[in-house]
Length: 374
Image (cartoon, rainbow, N blue to C red; front, side, top):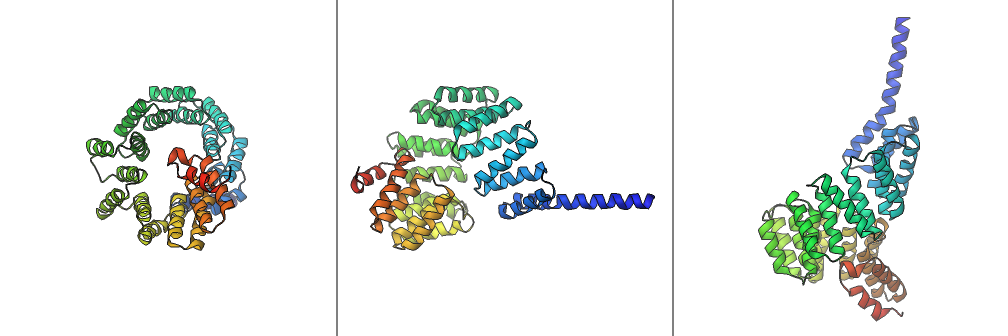
């Protein structure tokens, strides 16, 4: 009888191991950012146990990393049905709704998440962000203030509040918050990038940008600083300085996707199309789903006169992010090259609707005035 019982327990443990083995493999693939294989293994784990919340949770995260937002939302729906007391399920689903964007649903989920666990400061920050997108600026500032009151050195609270102040043209307050965020985390690219962009809005003050970098961010080995610095010159259409900054960084041994991207784009605008394409293809090898790189490769091919490859990469970019104003502008230029004015105008209007002029310049508006009948 004892032998029989031991054999039975062994079989149970073997079966349990088989159930968790796919989940274990999936986690390894997930941690290695191999999301296709992670998805395959998590799906197999769920076939063995449809209520395996660990496998479901990481399947949702893997779908999200693979830009399959609607599939990820479905998995979170199932997780919430299984257990509606987990704050993170609602929080993660809210982030997915933001990416669609569906800010009202996102706000509802964050409020539920907050009711389940009010200790997480990130919920104040994300509510502030959603309120800003719903153009409820006072509510947004209130939530960012709460976040800062709760955690006085919260990088993301200062960064997001600084961005909001910049959007409502309170530039002094924006500079104060972004500078504070940088003092908390000098390697945080978003705050540095936003501060450089803020300076570029204020009279295109290149000298001020340079002085700020040299005074507060002297460590040129920090990739985020170099990216922001070069991007500022790129926005100011100072392509020579952009390439110089990026080349110095690359020569010092820094390999970063956006340093190569910024230099590649600057080369294109300087008329050195092949040089630009070479930089972009170099980083594309390991970043095949980066819509910015895909767009810029398409732009390089367009300038080289290779319209087939241009179309291929631009459309890939739009499949990943169909709300990127710059990509619609690039495809519009491609359509104009093909003498397809009707299709070009559709894309130019989309680029304008998605805020091209607010982010970049009035190029799209001028193209609409020139080519599109109102």
